Length: 272
Image 1 (tube, helix red, strand yellow):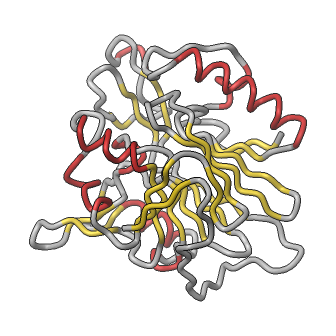
Image 2 (image 1 turned 30 degrees about the horizontal axis):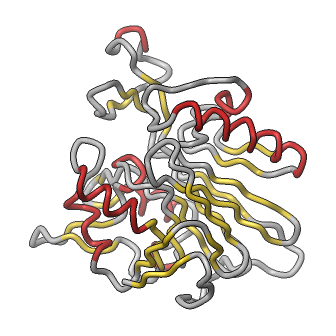
């Protein structure tokens, strides 16, 4: 485990050979890794939802319809993974692994894992369990970037929002960089702690060759929330979330950001 503050840069970089490494003149590539559509209510249980067959009105009052969408961003330097999904497995394989392979990416190709926060629908694939029941980092060739205070808060708070047994590996793994506040990774990935959706939630800007990809995690989870004033009861600071979305939407439109929306059923990727 490595602890860095906002002034420390380029001190922990893991390089692997990757067939997806960008070439001069190429733009960054974005690959959504959908884990499906779900409804979630105050119980904080994610229930699968079939858009063609299921009726949202028959779900519990206040149920939200969301997609769960980790993203891969391929740059000249890295194969980035943005959040790690629910951690569900099918036929003994982590769904996140299967989704990566379906897009021609092996789990060992991932070089950096950028975590917005550690709620169970964003951090479920952080680790995997071996045959003895022990958890291990899912991407051993990658460096994980996590806010130190977010990890501490998650471990102290626990279920139902956080799965402490699964994320506890972040406390001791040598693959983890614990961040302290705002900063920059490898001179092209900026991160900023908002304290909006959750107390230590962070957002990312990935900037390369004049292009900007913005990942707002659960501060900015859906396109319609960017376009409309909306205060959510499930946010730690709903008013701040709304204000930040308005700010980012205006900046992104002016500067032509590519927005990645983790919970958007219809528009996970939007170019401003």
